Length: 393
Length: 138
Image (tube, rainbow over all chains, first blue to last red; front, side, top):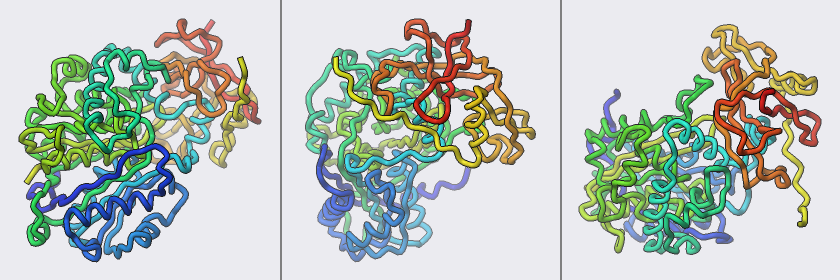
């Protein structure tokens, strides 16, 4: 394994920001990104002229725009020594923290604006490649049907415990109820029976297994720890380890879809950080579907494969519990702001580590494991898995 | 009950690479790519063998014999399938050792089980090319 370039705590996140997650905001990704930049500058006192790097996710609303980076920089007034557009779906925001850290470490820039902004309702992206030719014509209704097939495979191998998934849904919803940025239509308390009784989308995937698309944006300011100290920044969060895989085990034509890249990147990121799952103070897993959380618990090593439901039943995921999980509601109860979705749980982790989570604050928030998931491939598990370990300074 | 007019079903637009596949579909033949370097089949069609990285690919006709790996009953339709819910989609494992995403036809959801034997069928989706599907064997 290469030396862990994050291990010396030389990189610091000095600010987080997000917009309200909302349906039909009538705002463009540019406007939403500007709200996040403004919040970050106000919060940190960093001057706009000091931002010299930008790492963004590709918005679905701008999917046809091959000049997104330049147009966003122009709109916001940013002069960039380094820029990065990441298109590994929901793995992009966590991936961008690692990319920004690498750029800062190698001296390409000093202060990076990490931004995800999307108004998914505005323009649907069109399928290309094998999706247009071998997926859409067959009638696959996007991610829910793909997760229906994945869930069926899990059910055959281990048995699917819907009440365990329901417990995850309720734990996340409790977070959204006290999260003012969560989409208002999702901020109502719910029960396991509400989950079980929600209408079927693609068996066994129910409506309350799924994320709902919303508009919104989230972002971070990332710089060197040295620079952060010089600027007098009070609250720092260090990214201390990261691992990523895209297109996990692509040469297997008969893959086990209950296995994903987390079986590799979860243990890898923890090893780089010198931690075990028991050392993780809180877990902020990417959640496009509830079963994805359970698979991550198994594959990262919180429990063994097939034992996710038993682990879920015996674990308290509330902010006061043994393993606080997506304390702001996750995407499933906040809303998924398109391809900024991978930032929702990342921002919540940073908010917790900076001690700014208010009524849902986790006591002694020493570290957090944040993950990203990106893109549904052809009849396999998801395409990208990312694992980022954060530590409060 | 009112029927809302459905969108047309999405149709494949063959590329130079996939044109032989869709031409064969018109003749009721399901083609797979076979990599002569590795001796392995693959699906969907790609420019290189995924296990060799070489363009040592030839088209071979699938036997049409298969078993169901996993399935889902779709209650919310994909575009163009508005008037067909509920319908069944399967991850279908061909005897050649590849999986294909396809409709499971001529079967009630309750009669569809993992491991069941399937045979190749073809459906008309309103475009120029028949679409491969699978039905219970026998």
